[in-house]
Image 1 (cartoon, helix red, strand yellow):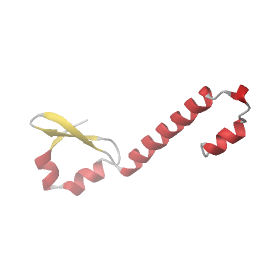
Image 2 (cartoon, one colour; image 1 turned 180 degrees about the vertical axis):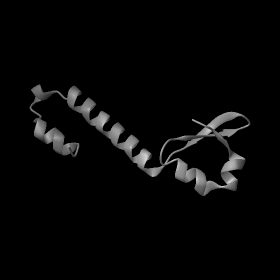
Image 3 (cartoon, rainbow, N blue to C red; image 1 turned 60 degrees about the vertical axis):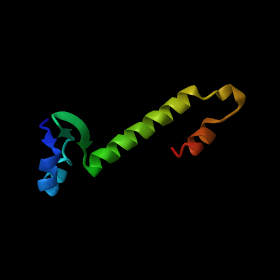
Image 4 (tube, helix red, strand yellow; image 1 turned 90 degrees about the vertical axis):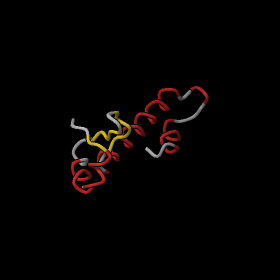
Length: 79
């Protein structure tokens, strides 16, 4: 994964935005990574993964003995 400087990003942002659709691009300032440029499709995949992980954790920790049905919990979580 090649990093780029902020100056390089300023010169040709569209080039790097297109590259970021395939993989994250580290952005450096004074030779230290300060940010990552990621494409929209990768961002959406990350958000979906985190939401799914959160939903699974909620299902695992739900106390079904208290009478809450799985179907009700699933409806609450929109799954």
